[in-house]
Amino acid sequence: MPRRKDSFSRALADAQKRLEKAQAEQHKANVALRDLNNEIPRLKATIAVLRNQMEPSRLTGAGRPAEEPMPPANMTPEELAKWYTERDLSNVGSIVPERPAAEPTSEDEMLPDDFATGKR
Image (cartoon, rainbow, N blue to C red; front, top):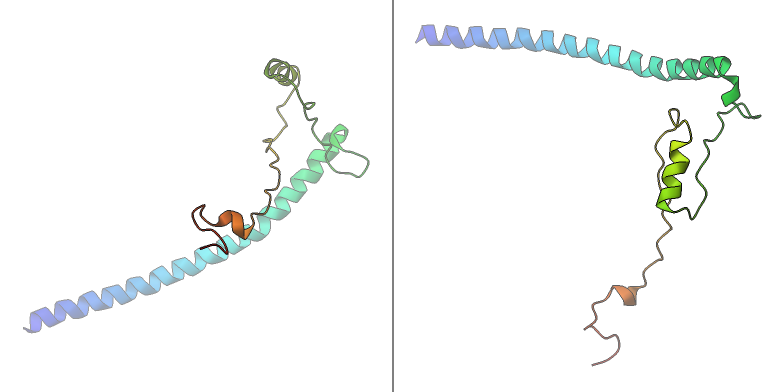
């Protein structure tokens, strides 16, 4: 039996040593992640400022990038396709459609049809 006890003791010591090493690695990675989380927004801001210095035509009077033009309302699919193919859209982000706000549903409308309020 002493041999088995020694192997468990050795496994325990190895696991404790590995745990300490893993925790040290985790701490180092967390510090690096924190530093990157602080650095990335500053880099993005720096890039935006430098890009605006190189491309002043993109700026409006307020110093912000100009809004990309939107297609006129009520265009047919053919007109819309032509409108998009005639413009350089390489700097345009995704266009998210606007959805009208949903009308609030009353409590009566949420009840099933066979549940008549106030009637028996």
